[in-house]
Length: 434
Image (cartoon, rainbow, N blue to C red; front, side):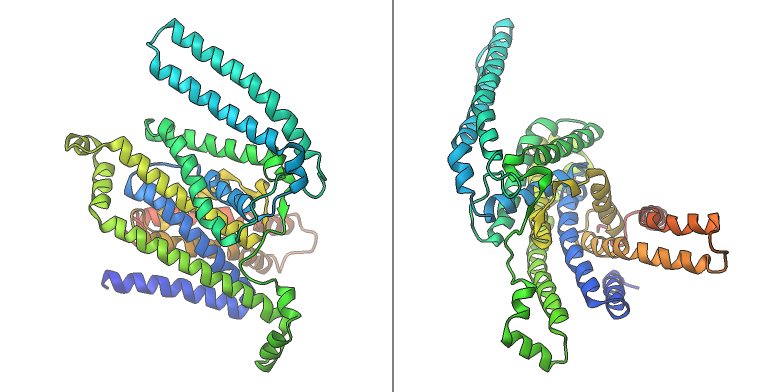
């Protein structure tokens, strides 16, 4: 069987499994799998750019996804005018003073010769700047968070259309990736993994604890949507008349309409990013990145700036993850920092890339759709299987109760088994890199 036919059959198989879930369960479930699968595919392409193209082991994926979600709040939510009046100026001025302190310390480090004088000057700037920063920043934050903390208690956003938040999420993640890359990309791969994981935890910790930024763990609800609310469609006589004429229930039809609309939007973004990634892969830049990945010493001997190219691909991959994070938050309709669990979801995205085929963009898309489908469906299938196995056991049996309770752990077990099977029988993934 030729490679194109095999790859096509793999995509058809995944599509068939999703369609079967639509017929046997509900089309709401199938569209939910499709929407999150498309978002996961975009994340997987971002990770594949970093790992498959350049060999960068980034396990801080959720940090950049969280920044994309934060961008939705900062761009699309209306500003809280009372909070801005009470303490907005103090918060902004404090942040500028903090940034100025860091810049001044960097300039001193570059301008002064190495020695005791430089060390003392940097220490004085950092300590003095810290106290000045806190003296201005803390009162502003207290004033902002005191404004209706049950409903707002934060500065809000710019009130712009939510679709603008998607590229803004990519830009915010790219900016953070540039700062991280300037300091961490010189590390060995295992140290880079630890550094990116730690930085992701720091980003999420800041989002959880800085209520003035996005309400912290109190969450921001009611984010603007690019599509109408279901209740608005149900109250639209024209929509109700059309779906009733098709023999559909207006409530179910409104839900399907909104989810299908999200599917179209997400598919368009995925196709654009996939096309751009493929063009990059086939370009001289893509060949150079793979040469650096395969042998950094040889590439550097040929005059390639390895650190600079690593920084480029690290920023690009992180920006794509930020776009995916903004899309996911838009789909959820709320920002919940407590749901960003780096070890859990970063592991899942890496499984998608490895199973699909590291270094192959189409493999990353296939792996994302397949793994997300299994992530959603394995738990109910596992519960059904355990109920079938224990159907002949006596009620109240300790073994029966244990087996039924273990169905909740089928997800992680299945992910591990699939990963082991793929690494054993197809170590380069279902669609390997050419």
